[in-house]
Length: 457
Ligand SMILES: [Zn+2]
Image (cartoon, rainbow, N blue to C red; front, side):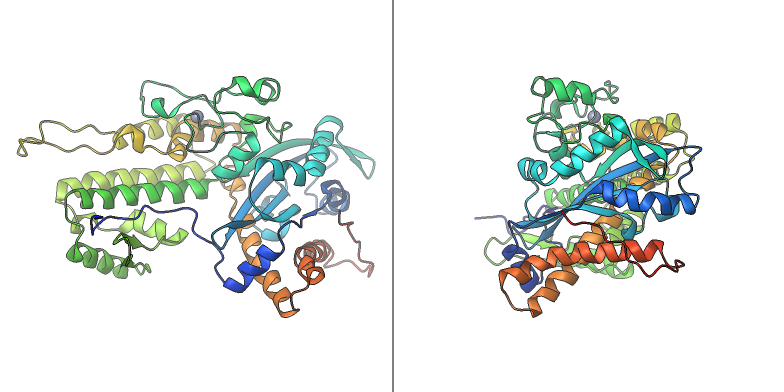
């Protein structure tokens, strides 16, 4: 029989969209996809951005960031969206309308599907990188970047999934070495090496899809790092209570009371069949609140509560330092390594002599890939991309865009009845909507009534 107080591990695969009718509509649309030419979009955009002095002929370099996102629609499928944005357009980094969609399909995030859906885009990017793009008499050069959540990034890089022994996009660290504080990991892979010899590099099972984007221009999404690492810290704290045999009604009501104080919506419930206790997966801002303000002294003796609090505060400080363009990378490196060694604080003394025993924190196998990336590659990526800062590579605008479009357009087709042609129009409509907003965002003051249409591939 299962332990009645067993806890459910947080799953990152929880559906983002659960409305059963929308889920069914998306399932019905599987097999259809839409691609849009990045070149067509740029040919339209560049003159507009020149007018606004965002792109200048005196500095004809376009900094183009590629992103991808898969929303979980129900439990089985995803709505996948690949976008690009122009980093030069600094005050629009976090605006969904300025992340331009180049591929869209309901299905799964698989290497072969992405390779097929992205073939046009990949060729265009290669050409931008090699030949530039001539628009209004100027030859524009390109610097290319990539940012997404871990899973999407791993697939595009041809990596063998986050649970594999060799998990890191930037270095050759293995799971066995992840907690070795004597190692000094830095960005050591190169994209050329992956193109020619991917099968000789541990963990790589496919050639990289974006072979024109250098490894040091792949930046992890800071928001995902915050969310996933907070999940792990929260999970480890609850696991300790459970290990101590204290995950009971009283503890649960103390946690619920504290969540109420913090105005965070949170529940525990017991699964009837398995008797496993489950709990609400916290939303982004709520995670930040819990990480900063949850009173651990309600659950642990003061010295223990202070140690865990120090680890949580240290992580939040790291996250804030990473997001600040003015942070000194060398200092961030130092701060990151100190945090990791705090995470790995060893126990002192003998547990059978509780008076002199001081319990440490966590074990090397409890370090996650995101923690490794934050600690070892965060400072280096910040140093290389100081001009933009980490926030410029946040994926939240793309996620929001994908979420809103699925919620809006698949609901709308539902009302049209269920035939295939109308279902197809949901993704078609998303692209048409994007083309319209592209026009309106750049032509508010324009007197020309002519709508420039962008061809849909
Ligand atoms: Zn690494």
